[in-house]
Length: 332
Ligand code: 2P0
Image 1 (tube, rainbow, N blue to C red):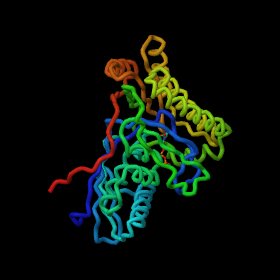
Image 2 (image 1 turned 135 degrees about the horizontal axis):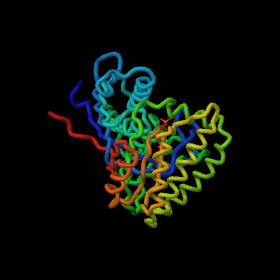
Image 3 (image 1 turned 45 degrees about the horizontal axis):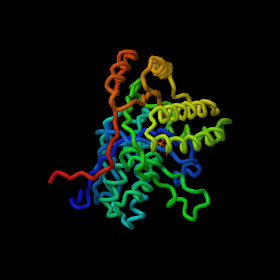
Image 4 (image 1 turned 120 degrees about the vertical axis):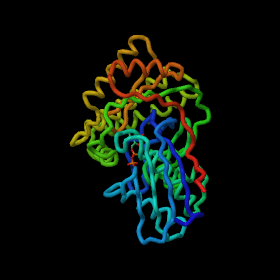
């Protein structure tokens, strides 16, 4: 690696309270609708990018050379960075996740946010956060949101915008006031049966529920912004839960169906409903995998985690609001 042209970045995953599910443009990774998330303080990804004189990129993920679709996506992303920077050098990318990859725990969000930041620095591109968010989006849609900490809104951008790429970026929500924790129930950590990219494509093309999902998620986004600004935890929880369940119903009605929910997921969802009936403030959300994340007030997170651990028997991790993606000083 050539010392000055190397950088290390750290980014955290985010969990959407109003989900991104459906692209209107696959190449530019433009979503059909806005989405809204909370960046977590757990499971960071650390990525180092160094320029090299070799003739190909070398990508190491969690200690092993990347291959197949994962390698192709990372090299395509580096090509985009090189094109923008008018540079031709190849890179060595070394990335470490602290969360199982491809298990619906948002490793592609933290991964591409960290890669966008480290590669931008290594290739000399500007580091302005909104521009970084647009760039990260090209790697993985949800990565646009992991550039920022706290509550984050990703704008789909107007379909008739003069430059649709410029119009679709994430930004932090400055008026959200809520101490929200997210308790992750690790139902299963193996790779998912269908990639979220393929699952989304199939849903858009074949699910008869997709138009209804889009209308509902747009309404949920407006309601969620109001609930966050008002600090109304019960409304935030209820909107997040109905949005996530609606997303799953929509993909489950695709042809062939996309089923990320397993019997263990349904059991955990049932426990959450039971805890709520028992008076606890808890609401569930799920992403492109079987794991269940439970929203609750920050001060009750440890108590809720204890209950969930006991009731489900699974590993449970408490997450709170996490930071912006940052560059890290490199060891001399
Ligand atoms: C989200 N998910 O809003 C939604 C909810 C999963 C369920 O964004 O194709 O890895 O790379 O843009 O960002 C997962 O999809 O998909 C995701 P691509 P991504 O968090």
